[in-house]
Image 1 (cartoon, rainbow, N blue to C red):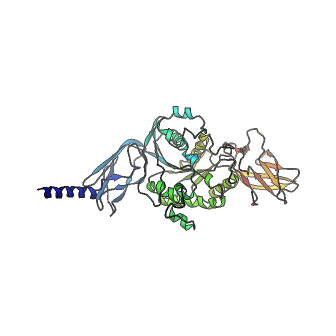
Image 2 (cartoon, one colour):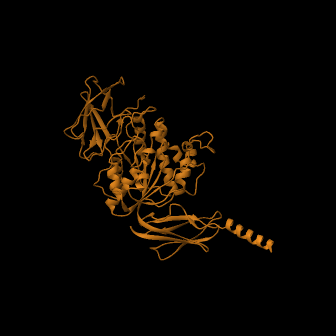
Image 3 (cartoon, rainbow, N blue to C red):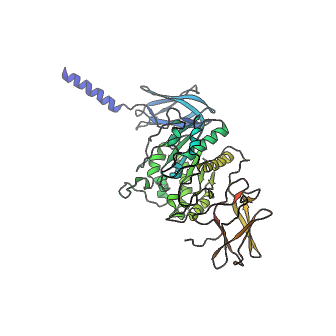
Length: 468
């Protein structure tokens, strides 16, 4: 009798080990937002070779798929127009799961390092502007947020940690402030639910956010262990593996990116890496037209590199990234603090790009004024700019950031006057025949030149001479 009981117990235990609970991936949880009016993947885990059926409460028919030999499954479902709340049901022969309080709307992913990661609480002795006012106005059932937990890994992961939360004065205290402010303005403008996914980690360079396949195609080695990386997040591919791979493919409208400070020491490499990272992520989402709007780093007195060269690398990369936009914040930096306190202006300028390019609000200016051409006449340089249809302005302040040089390559501070017509005239009486001009081309500056719509002119130069 005792042997029979033992055999029964053993059989029960064996079944419990073999049986895999039907589970949805962690992004599919209560309070989530699904991308409206599209076909989106839903995925998860079950017993191997098991039929799984998925249906949204807005659908009449189940979508069915069979899990693979590892128990993984993925199915595509048609999402409804903006609205909700809805439910998503999932079932197999022996199990079932449900996701409740689902909204259909616009979903964006925000990523990067500390300036994207910074919350309304700021950092130690580094506040953000208007923090209390932002908290007072945070409650909104139509905004949902999920922060992907920090996780550096050597191989791509299937799962991640994170929980969808409704926007409130409590939940936004632990979420990207830029991401939240973007979502808040977008929700107000479109009047539809907005979901924001955050995947960021302070102090991270760009290489950890790129896949092994992508980096190795650029002849950049990727480690097989962390022995040479006491700080795991610095290992190439580690953050892609732990914080991008688990969410890749989730239905989104586009990406927001704010990163680069940790790559200031090698701007030429960053110039190559950024466009490839965008291709890498779009490939992971199987959509090579997903919008990618990113922030050019703010001026700052870097101790380990020239910020002007990094900003130049980001400006050059912009030309090689289709369906993208770059936010210029030359007016928002702080000389001795790498974290600009005015996150609202960053989020606002990201919204300009999204509203104009993604949502078709063409009257909203987004693109930055950029040097188009110049001529030299009587010792003065006349500069013409594109993306400034109504000209430029310094808001009645002196323009002090121009420099000109002659054949001797010695730069002198230049006088600058906005012309009666479009363009700017710059000169220095000591430079009789100027051949090069620079604007704000130093690590630390305070931008002073804008389009009349309020978009700053980025740092630029017409030469390619060595810069210390």
